[in-house]
Length: 177
Length: 102
Image (cartoon, rainbow over all chains, first blue to last red; front, side, top):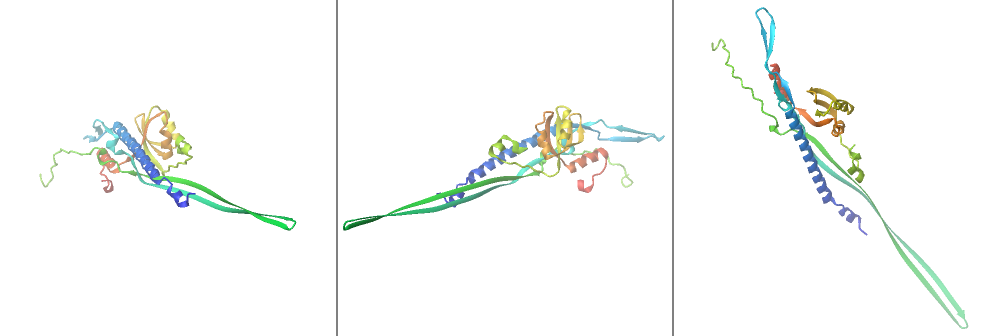
């Protein structure tokens, strides 16, 4: 009968770890694909933005506004980013409850016979011994896998760089006028 | 919800997925029934982009519930890059971003 130690050795830990790792790799790939699809959707969704409004106050005090033509800007350019997730840690817990019982039962039967006759007698004793050993084993087990998912910053190149080019000549100031 | 999947039932597994609070999600519609579906999933639309795209706040379970919704073409989690958003807004409004936003 396998001992408690052997039962513990029989738990397929390497196989469980391998399957957990492969499952996490597949899940991570699915998460990354979803984040990339979200990035594409954000890049394709555009909103019209007006980047300049000129307020003109006339000599008579009337005020007028003139805005520059709206420019279609994607949500990525505005600053909306897809969330990327990462499996930061994973744990396997295996709990086993092993119970083994051994019982021994010994039955002894003793029989005696005696015969008596003329000038002779005989006697015999028979002993019948029976040994029974019973083995019992009960194994209960449960396993638990849990993993932690954490948001991570998106790749730095996912958003276009925002650069402002100001070609206006510098205004005259009393110092350089 | 995950415990009802065929794989989980086969192994007698109980699966729990938890994440505190609500998340921001980008949702693209196939039709306008998606708005009611978002509300039923516990979501709140915070910004509409045209007629068929919105940004919504949703609990995580609501996100998983809406992934299979027929009226929704796409749903994905998003986050706001506050520095970049502040720089774009400063271009629009002329306001200078506060030091912690730069």
